[in-house]
Image 1 (cartoon, rainbow, N blue to C red):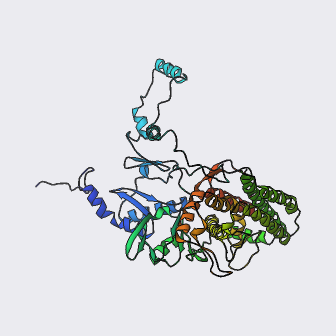
Image 2 (cartoon, one colour):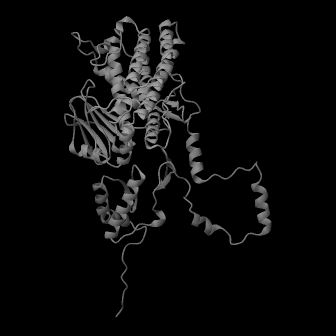
Length: 517
């Protein structure tokens, strides 16, 4: 009798191997997807995309457990946690930051290099190597990744297209760069009757049963829903798990509420924050820095427009506001400081009024309700800015409701009002003036109030145009005065949020507002 030895499995390279992998690893796919993990798999090679290190470590542990139940193990030589900043190769494609590069050169490991090295090198060869490596005329041989990057960069144009020259109060801003992903990417649902759902790894927007837009869920950091639109339970659950805030507003921009998960991780920071809020001296010190920053940036807007025109009212307003700088430092109570802030803002808006023609009907800042187109734009812009600051602060673990300048009251995120003060003029006021003075919006784009005290409202087209312009503004880059880094406005806000958290924790001595020059 002849005995035959039975072998398990299939040889590598067999055409049945990928098919068998798909069948055998189906349990792994389901386990990862059920945990809302983003999986990319080809046969037995796979990636799991995570937002942060902790999630990646948990995903790695889960994967190992599921594979162990299948009597499989991870290949430790090919398994690692890595980010897009450092880059990685998957299925012959190199991913580096926002670049996706087809690799023409094989990936070389340290063990591959060791195999190809001779065991001994003659002394004459060593001397030759030493001499040539010291020569400045011989460039180092680039690696595969360097060559790939050079090829990609060589395809880019030498110069960017010239931008249209328009009147703006922020000449130091740079247009958004395609090389940098926007920070805090926002999904706006502005049309009535839309339903936001989630299918696989994408958000799906439908109207009357028809799909009108699909967005990769990985690219959404916050959602703003305006008017009579809906969100499915599946999409809402995903947002809660991924800590994506959902802001609900009326079609005209009035705030209703925010759907957000209750995160208890930063409880120690919250404890320190409450302790700081109970310290009157600490609150006054932080509040003075915030108001001084707001004052400086409002004066910056006035001076920039005053340089371009004969505008005596602008210079008069700037002079009056300058006199308050020392007065603010001398404030002994928060109420006194808030009074000075109100007086400064009054002079500021009087100056801005001189830039506008009478048909805009702007006389002074009116908040609730806005009675003219300019106030309507300002209020709408401040609302968008407010919830951008809210999302950034929440991501850093700060309690949005415990502020230092604005008083604590039920339902009011006081710290968000604090943090946005220094950005009101730089972002919203500058944007509103740009849209008006460059005639991108006119008074005919608004629904004027039919009776005294009624609100002035943006038309649907004006609202969409403003949101688009607001996103462009937030993605424009400036030099952050405290770090010297070229950052877009959202990243600038994030820097200020982190600074505030460091001051609360006692790791930084004082808070410095972001003031542009």
